[in-house]
Image 1 (cartoon, rainbow, N blue to C red):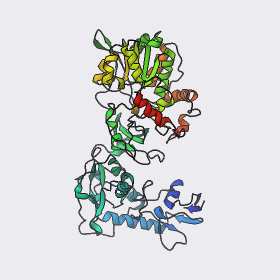
Image 2 (tube, helix red, strand yellow):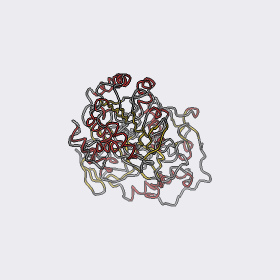
Image 3 (cartoon, rainbow, N blue to C red):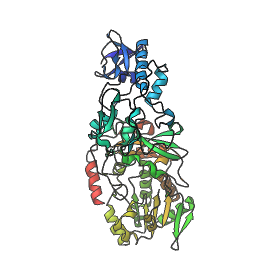
Image 4 (cartoon, rainbow, N blue to C red):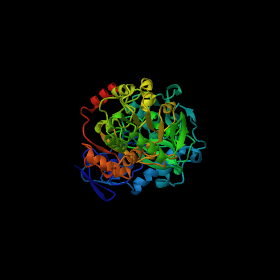
Length: 533
């Protein structure tokens, strides 16, 4: 492997590594616009020019491969002057409208001017070149005057989605990006165009004029929209989520996420959240404390054994599933789970980018913990025959099935953990308020069998609690043991009990998760489970 020296620091890198990549490994940031780690190199912005000893002129760091013995200077006077000159030409026709630009605070041009510019322009045109502004392209808005012609959007459309919506039009200083006849972007990955744009030329229609980014807090998490498990960042303020952004994980989603997943933030703060427990008495709902509601559920379960049934949800975390399994095993009831309920999420087609037909984030976690034993169809048959006295649901999915209405009407006691209100909850006899994914610590296992962390961004609404915590409290009420007071400790119990998870911990999962190995037959098992249920 070649060794090189960058700003006096030596590094050894694999053959083919570029200077800009080697510098990043050393923590050295070389200014750039067009380079992106998950797009092909274009080398058109000329912002990443560096001085390479023995080279006749400055080289672009994004497309210069490291060679053995190479000595690179990224902050020499020649390199610094090149950076200033490039910025000066970019700013000749750029509208200085930072106070009203939504990209302010995360704009490459703004940041790099402060770091590498701060110059007095030597070019003073009589009038800036005017281009199109506020062009509505559906999910995104285009402001061509702010564009630095980096071609990131063009390469994203060509290489990732294969839609080729964008192109360069006109010539010289009138060049700009455009779609054919200003047609809107219609694929499921339009939000990524705003992410890859280094300036304010492409902005998310959904986030536009909503919030200044420097007011937002960031929390790393995983999208719950499907079994891909895209790594995301929750941007939130004062307990309210304002947007989701993709977080780079080369093994899962690279730097992308779908537009369907981006909308998951909307469900967190809806007015329809279940914020308190309630129990049906005399045909009417009565609000009650969570402790009292759990006492009621425990009284239903005590001594019932085979007359009880439990249905887990693949929307729950691994910790939720493990605590729920512990409860079912303690009581002696049967345990099932649903796979891919088509009525639970917006129906979308699976594609070859990120979207998967399984709209649940943790189906694989259910399979790994062997939660499906005889099938929900068999369970409903037992309900219809009167063989199930008490049914505890970890989510409301089963209540939404039309075929389940009649069998469930024959069950004496139905308790459900729910995050949002819905007409299906009227089919239960007791409702427990569950925290949503952004309000809990935990983990999901995606379809690749990669275990990934989700992190609590803010406090849960009302009396809502993580599902694993409510299950653990029921275990304790029934005389069992679940020695965990945090999700981290619950995961440690899971790792000690579930084959394949041995030796795992939150620390071992890190920022991008840990793969358990090839899924093997689990994809087939998932399909078979979906058919059986």
